[in-house]
Length: 171
Image 1: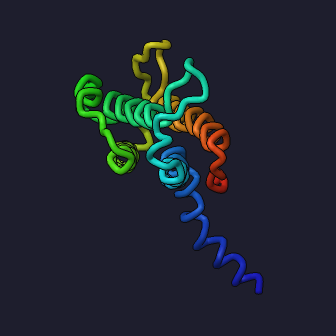
Image 2: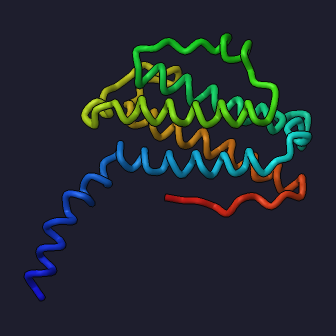
């Protein structure tokens, strides 16, 4: 029995260690974050995509587009050699709910691929950021934190529209 225990520990340790790197933890969480936000975007009827609880807030659709823009900006600027063109995104902003959801999916997938292709070692590299020097790992945290911040607002929009938000998804 003892041998069997050590065999499983020996076999499972590399798998567990692989899942505990900052990059692998981010990628796992990013997939779940994508699914959770897509459920919210799908839950809101298209005619309520213009809903805003106060005039100080963006409407539901623009919250989603803001999330996309931030994801694309951070991931291209800090995890690729591409240049992000915010004006092009604004000029080609989707109109329909289906188009917004498609852009949301595409944006999440692009971030995932860029981070996946980043080496674990490069996450300690310091980059210039408008708020001062940050590590790429801090940029990863900001990517997820920004999505979480606006997703929290969208939960309120759904509740105020008397739509039950999807069940919370963590890891």
